[in-house]
Image 1 (cartoon, rainbow, N blue to C red):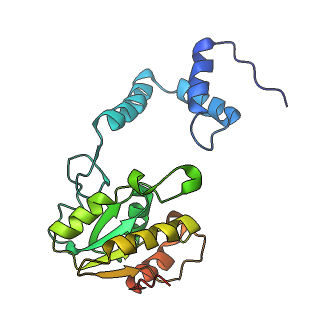
Image 2: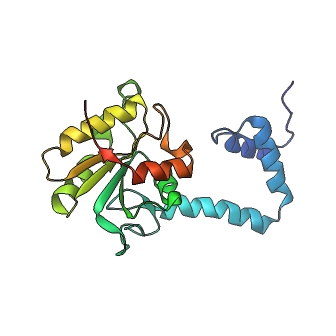
Length: 205
């Protein structure tokens, strides 16, 4: 099927930008852009301004690297959370997934990825040193490895275990209700919640 010809350069530019979003092909981008064109100028202005505000004003928590409107996220600043417990996750989506289970009341540490030599990601590219600093300077009694059960996730968990081994704390891993190769963000809430509750001591062998 031939591509739709766009007679307006302004519309074409907007479609080009929309199609840069992951999972959005050019036909879908055109349909979404035409939808926005039917909205009032004020509605479209608010739509665009929301993304500008997000990009310019959003912070990453100075403690756990989660997204936050302030320098410290609501989770880290919540006195009712268990501050002796840190759950290590790959990304912000994993924090959201675990929070949705309502089965965890500790804090988080977002690594910002996993070790993946094939993608050029090494330990120095992740927020590992800040995790070690937290363990050393805070009253942390347990670190939970809640990384995806992919080869990269397992490699990262093993690397972290070696780095955390000298500290006097419990190192655990989420229970294997999650199959090998699964990513945390795609796991249903019930399974993920049970995996957190039934976590086990980390066994590097």
